[in-house]
Amino acid sequence: MKKTYSNIYGVLGIVFLTQFINSEIGSYQEHSINECFNFTVQLSNGTINMTLEDAQDYEAYGSLTLERIEIIAKTFKKTE
Image 1: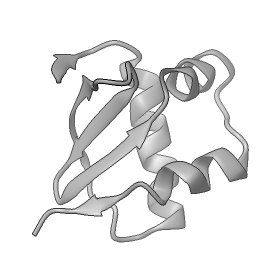
Image 2 (image 1 turned 45 degrees about the vertical axis):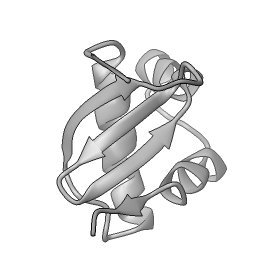
Image 3 (image 1 turned 60 degrees about the horizontal axis):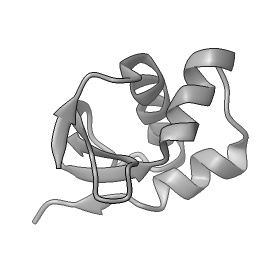
């Protein structure tokens, strides 16, 4: 995975929204482009994954559907 600052505002906004869905989701640390050319977001206590399209859409329009936010929140993997 390659660390990036691409679509940072979209990624940050989505992390913020997912915290309302799952209060266990920690704070943003950094994000990387993964092998599927999407984003893996490193959090203070784990990771979440989102598509590049999700981050771009949030940056462009300032919102995502609740369904998309819930899907992203479900990718949360807590660090042991």
